[in-house]
Image (spheres, rainbow, N blue to C red):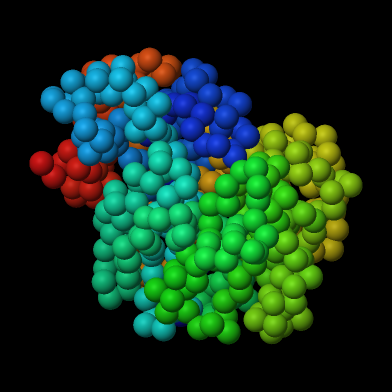
Length: 446
């Protein structure tokens, strides 16, 4: 049964803001407390989704989280009405409050790890929400993320959902940002590639010293077990600790893969030759392409600034493999020069398409951060909630909804306005009706 790789992008939420919460993410920290543009950010994301849909891709939408997260604030001891909780938290513990206002759920590459049915022992597509324990502002996402995924992929004949891993740094799991898959055809058994930053239970192994390693080997191995993957079709690779310390907080900031291609920076992995050997052994076909970008052509700094590797590497319906890149790649001389040479060379990557996702880029995430890849065969495509699949009708509904409800600008002080929470809840409640999600948010379950 033929299959395609779908992309489910995170819809930017109505409280999109720059709080600079992500230590180790250079872009996030450098834009802390800047004025944000929620309406522009959401429309930019929707334009990208619509463009990919128009290219013939199966493009889905994932709903945002509710923010401020009043429920987490209540767990931390702030009491009273919702308005009183927000006021108390913003005054008494402003840093905690800002963490509970995070806009980071827009980056759905961190939402979950997804294994296609062709790889899993039970023949179902498996989802495990990421626990994101390394950052408090992200660790409050998994429950609602799981609710949203279950509302979109609800057919238990085709989809299996797991609880996120234990909420401890030993099992720190950042989802698909550290996971990719290689295959000849999407409907065939593939090689699942898990990249981790450290071994949690062995302090003698190499690890970064400046910035945290967010993904552990133990977490990656646990997800592989949960999904029922065949060990011979799984490859584990350690990210280079030195590049983590240069601001490469996830593997998808320094490498990206698709089908028979791994596109990566020279400094991406701790032991590149071993990675290549392991992939070749598991893939068991000579038609695999390792495209390594030398440091002398593109520095790690330029790669991070432009998000050269936080691009989407996709196959269009005509089978052409293309890169979906942010405009920042075109604006960076070294990166632009490299990409022009890349598509001129003899390799599977044929074109580069540039998109304006500046609102996301300023908060530390490029095109690849904005999407969760889900391989779906024909029956599974029909089993997906149709109201979460991008088309002309949904695009019109969502852009109308954004223009109606979203604010043009938002500052850090605006987040403490109780009226914003009221607006946001009404906005999200309407969204769940547009997308037929049911009651996925805590405020809808009271």
